[in-house]
Amino acid sequence: MPESPLETRIAQGRGEVPADLVLKGGEIWCMVTGSRIPGDVAICGERIVGIGTDYSGRQEIDVAGAVLVPGFIDTHLHIESSCVMPAEFDRCVTPRGVTTAICDPHEIANVVGENGIRYFLDASETTLMSLRVNLSSCVPSSPLETSGAALSASDLAALADHPAVIGLAEFMNYPGVLTRDPACMEKLETFAGGHIDGHAPLLSGRDLNGYIAAGIRTEHEATTAAEATEKLQKGMRILIREGSVSKDLDALAPVLTPLTAPYICLCTDDRNPLDIAEEGHLDSMIRRLIGHGCDELAVYRAATLSAAEAFGLKDRGQIAPGKRADIVMLDDIADCRVRRVICGGVPVSEDAFAGREPPAPVGLHSVRLPDISAESFRLPGDGETPVIGIQPGRIITDHLREDIAATDGDRRPDPARDLARISIVERHGRNGNIANGVVRGFGISSGAIGSTVCHDHHNIALVGVDYDDMALAARHLARIGGGFVVAEGGEIKAELPLEIAGLMSHQPFEEVHAALKTLRHAASDLGITLHEPFLQLAFLALPVIPHLKITDRGMVDVDRFELI
Image 1 (tube, rainbow, N blue to C red):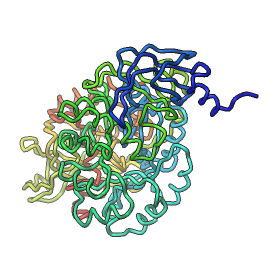
Image 2 (image 1 turned 90 degrees about the vertical axis):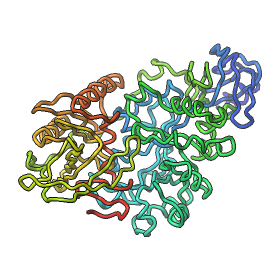
Image 3 (image 1 turned 120 degrees about the vertical axis):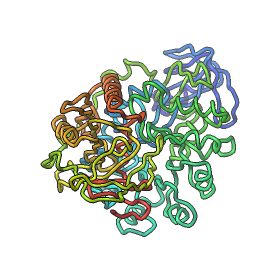
Image 4 (image 1 turned 180 degrees about the horizontal axis):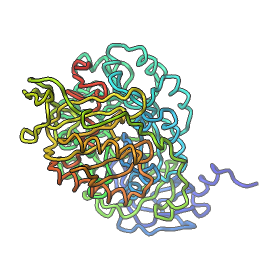
């Protein structure tokens, strides 16, 4: 009678029969004791079955000289922000050691609703990496915007049994939690006892107490050491974030110590292909944290075991018998120089990615533009005007005020004062709203840029100083199905079509990377000084991040959680 898979694992672990795969000659770094363990690693299927002694295997890989650590876990991200499909994201970051990614697909869910989440659940069945999903809690993020869909507690509950699902994703509507909004209460009660991700920027004191009392366990929005420390002291696990726009690693590095490491994880949240290709992913965060002087074991523990424990993933985070065979072979610990990766027992290579059929795309032809012209971007009025002030490297903005005199009844952009028009155009075909405001911090002196990546409602966001170019950019985005564009002098200077819900491209990662480089140069030619203008633009429309934002319904005072 054939052995069961369980019996086979035991037999291979005991060395009675050759293991499926053996890594020979390396040194295992234990994330629990900090010890370095010499000896082989035996793997049966997707599981580790033995360590610390000699094994023979049907396949053997010489890893002499390498230090073996568990696969890295990105504890919070939106794959849509990589601008590529999950299969391409997998091909991009798994060779860098990221073997588990916990995603919140609320970007695509805000465009096409439940079908967007199902797209990611289907993708999780085809990726080499372990793609896990937290169900999007706030679609839309608030009542102050128009999204393409809305998800109720019952909509989310219907998806909860999928094996890729962990729990409820970042609860961004923290004012709704604190005021006990009925829809918020229903979602929190539906997922009570399970994992619920947090999102509470600058929340402190009794408000923070109330928010955590709702059963919320993690937090990736801490931007200062003091904020992170208070949240740790009140029982939250802190996810240190370093994305393309939200850069909190430098501020939070002092909080990561051997004492706190079990309660700290790493995440990227929103990182685009430019930064992944040029800087890295979690490997980049590990390098930089060690460069800050953080204890090396504490850093690697945060990237692996602490992350697994925080999200209830008991089958990973250690190189130990019975655990999932997610292993990163390092030639250099401080530099996080990856020699090779094993993911779910599979050696990572181009061949391993080949033949994996991604799910059919959703959200094609999703840009439905209202009638639009240069006149659509006028801002009537005169005198004192609220201005969104960009804080480079942060998604928090300043609530500024500037005196802007009207010209022919319009408070026009003023490049000399770094005052540009920012406009949000509703693109889901719901109401045709167009809202106009003023932003400082782009440095733009001509033309316009436009994007359908506009958190979290993903309407069209435009920044410019020329209304004709803004209208051209919006119309071109509709023609290409969404994406990024740069317009100047009546011409489209650069573009990246993102056909899947206006968020992701069909193209390989390398082609998206090349297009983004062209866009960056074209934006710079307009005078834009921001390192990542398109993702920075996207966050200016998110009304759950202080202090001043804009949606299709108008300027939003986030501190008061109301339209101006």
